[in-house]
Image (cartoon, one colour):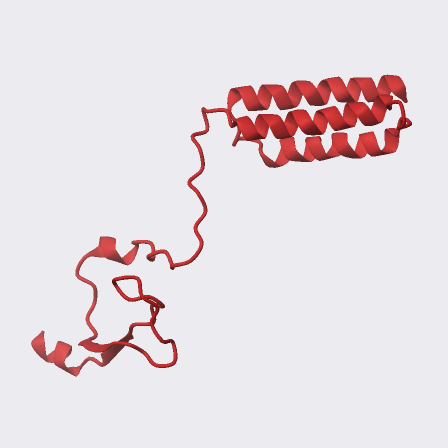
Length: 142
């Protein structure tokens, strides 16, 4: 068994991280550390399926829990619904624009479709009820 390990090729490991352990930038023109180790099969099968370490760079914030309502999402949906309603009815200096209102309603429909399964109960209920009301109002005004 030891003879097989001695005959196996070596693996060259090159450290290509952009930052040192203390956070200072490292020059990228030359590798900073090289290590050679004999190639051997992994001893722990769990380490094979372990996900790779995340690369340094901008990170996205962790998603909120699905059971919680996001105030910003509720505001966005309400804002888009208000715009669609304003376009349906018009205002003093703004005539009714049903084609633009239809587009806003379609945007809300796309938002509902693309976020299906990722919304809290409150978010889903608000979005679907606003869409129903706007679609009904659009059909009446048409």
